[in-house]
Amino acid sequence: MKRRQFLKTGATVPVAAAALAAPAIAQGKIEWKLPTSFPAKAPGVGTNVTSFASRVNTMSGGRLTLKVFSGGELVPPFAVEDAVQNGTAEIGHSTPYYAAGKNTALHMFSAVPFGMSAVEHSAWLKFGGGQELWDEIYAERGLKGFYSGNSGVQAAGWFKKPIDSLADLSGLNMRIAGLGGEAMRKLGVNAVLLPPPEIFPAFQSGAIDAAEWVGPMLDQAFGLNKVANICYMPAFHEPSAALEVVVNKEAYDGLPADLQAIIANAAEATSVETLAQFDYFNALAMSQLKEKGVDFRAFPAEVVAALRKASGEVLAEQAAANAAFKKVWESYSEFLALASDYASVVKVPSFQQRLG
Image (cartoon, rainbow, N blue to C red; front, side, top):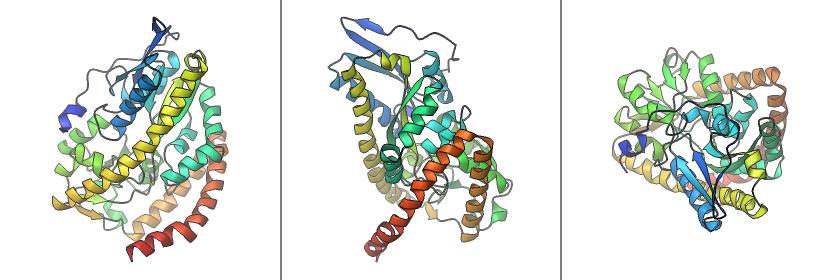
């Protein structure tokens, strides 16, 4: 797959306030618009939405058809939730923290620095009360969210120069998402959030000095290794990062029960496929990138310690500023403590035994 094939986007269309339009219905068939925040032809994030849409179309026997619009094609990449809320589209695909400007608690449904793994995050959502909290927050905006996949552990970023100490971070212009960007700011980094199609051009032109995107599979597909050959892993800020399908609640409630179940089950099936895809193709892409001379490194202990401290400060500040964030963080951290204890006894030693 060539990078230009999925980075190309059309002109963005402003999101206009509108009442939810009646779905296109012909001979008992419904067609919904499905904009995504990502290039629809990108591996991982793009195949997540196209696979989900295909499942819904097939499982419903064509009664519910989802027309996928690539990031920027129907609405701007960071405006998908707004489009679903105001009825420009009935359903959308994104990651919750792209809408954190509406409620900072949404960070917890995407990624948390030094937080849960993909499997732990899914466990918290399904069995630890996370989904119920997510439903509460989205209900305030007339939305319904479904977990649709996860990238697993991401990369910390691509750098043109080594990061050997904290001083090397000071003054860097870096594309980085989520709460990790706030932590980086505390260490003197000028953190900016660019939509996916803008990352490579900004990195190549020198507008940014470092770029965090996802991990080997997507980073190679986007060509980040053509700009820099130093990649730091793992990501302190995204030990996992979730994807979502978000539905206009009024439109969802208007569906018959079987179509509602199809949306839910298609999202769950796609989530399993997506994590497997990331695990397999990240391993393959890392091997390919090593052969191309990419230098994979880990941040020095001094930098990790500073990022841990800065992340703790960010989380405390967000909890103090937003009662919803505090409520979700209490639930998240309660399970994180249990999961961490279990991992220290079972998962970490298991990896150590395997590696020798």
